[in-house]
Image 1 (cartoon, rainbow, N blue to C red):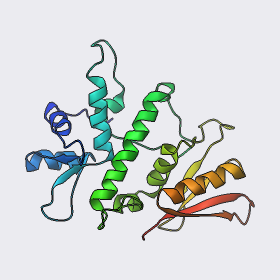
Image 2 (cartoon, one colour):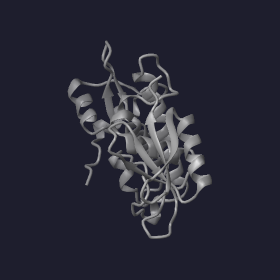
Image 3 (cartoon, rainbow, N blue to C red):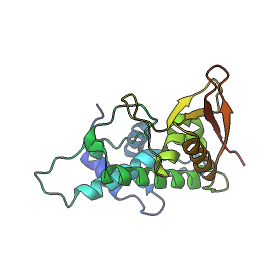
Image 4 (cartoon, one colour):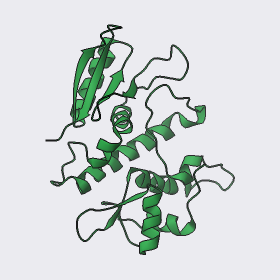
Length: 216
């Protein structure tokens, strides 16, 4: 289970620049946020620290929690700050559905765009950044979920997209229940900065999408 944020960490995240996510704090405080996946150290001088998508989500969760009644329980993700895009096929608690999830996904996607802007050499937001290239399945799943596509449910027959690893180190496979959904996934991924195309599995003859982050 993810440890809750400390009061000092919550204050640091809350005080981050609302536009860029730039953080200010001691080296120890910033390093602790980096270890938790809530911040990253910019590779170029002056090596400032910025919120990651998970950090942006944690800040939004704090803002949403402020007006709540004291007796209202908070979801674990509100304090954990760890966001996970749905890759399809995983069990999802009923409490994690609905408008709250929509806001969570939107915030994570906005944080991802900011991460692209801050880490791509030309500040481009129209193609994946280094983080996405090392987290291919999560990155592709986030792009699909943020665009409104529905992931497959855990139960058999609950159709939707499924994002899976492939033997290729720089590509993921996306499976969908029908041709229109498959084509829609291709369009979404291409619009999100990925190279995507439809292929046929030799043994099953089922169509799928092979996608990789665009570099230029």
